[in-house]
Amino acid sequence: MSHGPVAVERWGVWEGRFAGPMPSAGHGGPGFSVDFDRDGERMSVPGFFDGDGHYLVRFSPPDTGDWTYRTRSSSEVLDGQRGWFTVTAPGPGNHGPVGVAGTFHFAHADGTPYRPVGATVYNWVHQATDLYESTLDAIAEAGFTKLRFLVFPQGGGHVEYVPPTFPFARTADGGWDVDRPDLEFFRAIDRAVADLLERGIQADVILFHPYDRGEYGLDGLSAEEDARYLDYVIARLSAYRNVWWSLANEYDQLERPDERWDDVFRQLVRIDPHERLRSIHNWIQLYDYNKPWVTHASIQNGWAVAEPGRAVLYRDAYRKPIVLDEIKYEGDTVERWGNLSAQELVHRFWLATVGGTYATHGESFLTAEGTLHIVVGGRFRGESPARLGFLRRILEEVDGTGLDPIDKWDDTTSTVGIPRRLYLQYLGRDAPASWAFSLPQGVLGERVELGDRYAVDVIDTWNMTVTRHPQVFTIDDVQRNSAHARGEVQLPEGQAIALRVSLVD
Image 1 (cartoon, helix red, strand yellow):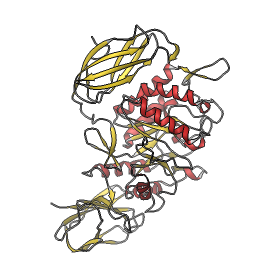
Image 2 (cartoon, helix red, strand yellow; image 1 turned 45 degrees about the vertical axis):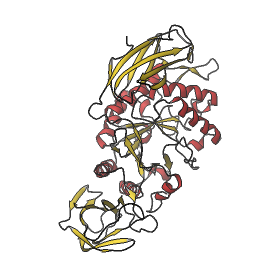
Image 3 (cartoon, one colour; image 1 turned 90 degrees about the vertical axis):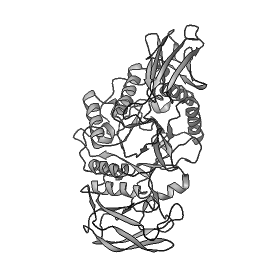
Image 4 (cartoon, helix red, strand yellow; image 1 turned 135 degrees about the vertical axis):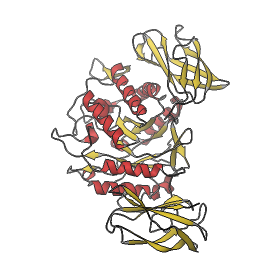
């Protein structure tokens, strides 16, 4: 028999539903997990109580074929139930979960490269339906590939809307009973992740944050309460292939020792059978992203991409993908973090790109209600989203894992690419009138050789155009640290221009 669908596609979500006793202490009641097996390939997946006398388990099968399962529980009613289902080939658009690729980049499980050009809307999930859907449409239409959002609602600080539900039931003394999760609250989180998945957008789920501001008390949970909350939310969401885990936003604003965050990471590794990406976002103090449980660095630094040559240093420090999740926002607030022009934010994204790193967008125009897009969402007012969608399309045309610095030791052009095959140079916001053909030569990878032929595309990063230069350039001078060809490319002087140089077969 089967307690769920008899067929599911690879990397999809198989959801099993099992009748069981009402827990005396919420999801922590009898304990419940399911063992899945396919020809000796085994995974144990935790389940959770979902109301009305039923327990759910969500499993994302990593391979096709016939799978069997067996439940395990201290409850005799739940224990020992068996069944099977078939896993079929993935459907269109299903490339599997995102993981680390090529040390500094990302790819889906089927090898398809993934380019994170993300956005941030902290309280998106906790808004009224019309605003929630408007935000979802805006993110998808802009072409963002990842959305960062909070699980726990934010209090104060440009927040006017109080959500109708909260994550847990209240105790008699006004605290939170983490053993009694509010099912409607967590179903809304389920829906948000699923809605993003349907649109091909990664869900960067922020598990903790310091923005309670004394309103709800959710930032005051004990370490033991944190652990029980994690057990529940990871069991609910881990099977969705678009989930990333962000342990906290501005973790260092919470008065917790680093050892407590280390323990949270260890628990996450232990309880997440699907091994989703894991990181933590800083305020002032960087977390030690070299620790083995961190898959990529999620960094806030308003300085890192203000000038070229800075972001690349994080790559050497951590030897992991670098995602600059907060580099200031396009907007008009008085705070220094929220008043970049669209031109400046787009410029910084390109500097992140030619540093071999990635960046995340946010919008902070003050609304009539006194709130911000990064807080509640809605339609975009700024001019940067369209230009960042254009950048994403440029990145997705790269036939390779990602763009890496060619000569980071002393390259004033900040050129990234795939040695010999492809180069991307960003000339900044004020391009010269012309560019003489010259490529850096690095130590790693293939080297440019005499006779190699290259095409040059002129990319207008603001006007979103790509123009192929008519000349094909032939390398006639190869030096230790550079290679040259005769000829120049005329440029729209004073514009924000990038160059894409591609080897011609």
